[in-house]
Amino acid sequence: MSTQALTEKQVQQALEELEEWEYENDALTVAYKFSNFPDALAFIVRIGFIAEELAHHPEIYNVYSTVEIRLTTHDAGNKVTEKDVEFAKRIDNLEM
Ligand SMILES: C[C@H](O)[C@H](O)[C@H]1CNC2=NC(N)=NC(=O)C2=N1
Image (spheres, rainbow, N blue to C red):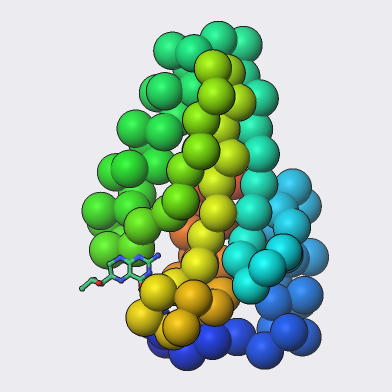
């Protein structure tokens, strides 16, 4: 999978399939709200397994039952690449 930075247009196209996601400050971002902390934590762990599988690691910010995810590719100068899009799709496909 390419780790070349996507163009603005390519990112906007990818976002059409990623309904909850936003593009801000060169990253794909999303925020989820869970019922409680254990559910939020379980979600974070599941994301961790995907990260290891893809060898691609997200920024994760958790406060109690909320989880914010930020995806960018360090190896591409902190820009959005196909890997970030793939990761976002995998996260969206998690059943919660
Ligand atoms: C060698 C290893 O696969 C790379 O260093 C990976 C690790 N995880 C990574 N995660 C992210 N978000 N961006 C990267 O460029 C990156 N590179």
